[in-house]
Image (tube, rainbow, N blue to C red):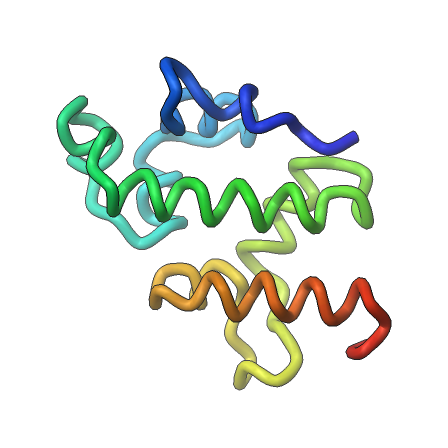
Length: 118
């Protein structure tokens, strides 16, 4: 079952602590996973920044798109971190998000779901 955005959010914004809890990891690891420094997920002013919120939102949206095919948010997270994507020179979704290419990952997932890629 897909995790609702609310599971990852608190007070109207994505909360690194909640994301870490759902993914059974640490806030530091969440920061690394989306390509941000530790302060971005620890200092309240940085957590609220548009860049931090955008990166956290991108990861959550990608996880929500692929979770139905894996049946588990944790397995979706493992895929996000480690599975090379066809057509991206062996890069993973995590690497692409860290480079600011989340929209390409979402387009890829949509194309796979539509049967356009294997």
